[in-house]
Amino acid sequence: MKTAIIGGGITGLSAAYYLQKEIMANQLDMEYHLFEKEPQLGGKIQTDYYNGFVIEKGPDSFLARKESASRLAKEVGMEHELIANNTGQAYILKDQHLHPIPEGAVMGIPTKLGPFLTTGLFSITGKLRAAADLLLPRSKAGADQGLGIFFRRRLGSEVVDHLIDPLLSGIYAGNIDRLSLQATFPQFFEVEQRYRSLILGMRAARPSVRPGQGQKKGGFLTFTKGLQSFVDGIENHLDEDAVHKNKSLKKISREQGQYRLEFADGQTQWFDKVIMTSPHHVTAALLEDDPEVQEQLSSISATSVATVAMAFDESQISNDMDGTGFVVSKKSGYTITACTWTHRKWTHAAPEGKALLRCYVGKPGGEDIVDKSDDVIIKAVLEDLNQIMRIEGRPEYHQITRWHHAMPQYEVEHYKKMEMINNHLKKEFPGVYTAGAAFEGIGLPDCVAQGEQVVQQLINE
Image 1 (cartoon, rainbow, N blue to C red):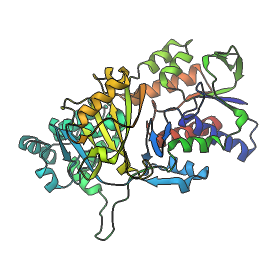
Image 2: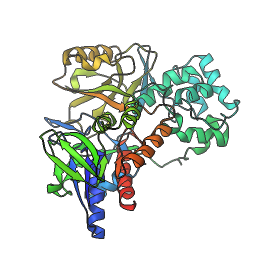
Image 3: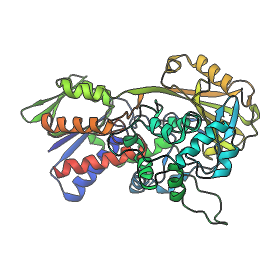
């Protein structure tokens, strides 16, 4: 049996690794081929190396508590290269001031009274409105609802606009009021259903820290040589004859119980099963013979963003803030949506005496900036930064990476849409499977887990 894996991002790489593992461990009469249209694997995982700087062009790390990625790292012999981030104060940029994120805030939900009452992020009215969470009844169980709408009902719009939305925008880069609660953070609904109050529920769920336990370990992981090294490590464990780069696919069609793959170079190949890990809009175009699946996949919206990395000498930057970066309040008129002081967050990211800032631009209603020239973007970013810190001159090096339609939006009823797509594929395209950031989690561990799960699904059917 022949299986094609379409797309060489982290989902496709994971699928290839785990499928190869199953074939070897169980002596399966099966072969696989991984096809990637670009000259390198990794998809949005790309690392730039410049004069001792390690600059991530896409994601810079992954959640440590989601163990699928670190488990795969161990399997490919890279666990010794995993490092956790340095912890430090994070801030919210609002009204030209950096406000410390209140201590005890869990994804913006207050669990400690003192820091929340004394913060300058919210008015007295906003604080009183948030306290109403202690009295409000539970949501009615049943239909999905907007993530932002859920939080606004519990805590009020001030807390959402100035704290929760900026924090969550760093994950989804979308309109929080349109995002699905069940597809993004179902645990908050579960907390509300169990405890009635989000504040009381999150307080009860917080792990207690005993005196003398030392500094909290960072909750994110990456690799000492950058995330690109993880891609390379996985690729080194794959059969090189099964990996095909610079191989652009034009169309997939079902004929006589098999799948005909037509490539841009004129070649045609036949497969029994196909794992689609390409971006959802690409998958929709490849299955052009089926208007229904095209419509469903194309209806998943996605935002465009750009990462703006800038390397400086430390002497160029005057910043007495003790922290690792900030996110920007929704109601503030800035171009940037966040900035990481990367040299403080990751010890491997910059040489001694150097500073690396990594900013983000692009948001719903403000995506035009992504397609501006490098000079225009750098100028806008530096203007924003100089309102809250002093930067002398221009960066000695910059790297701007534009990601068009790269952040899938899990809008309300997302899971119903996924169910419809999967049911339709089973009926019209048996043996075709979808996985990736647009489906069941956009983080790196989520994509690794999907790659592993889709292999088990393929093997067991």
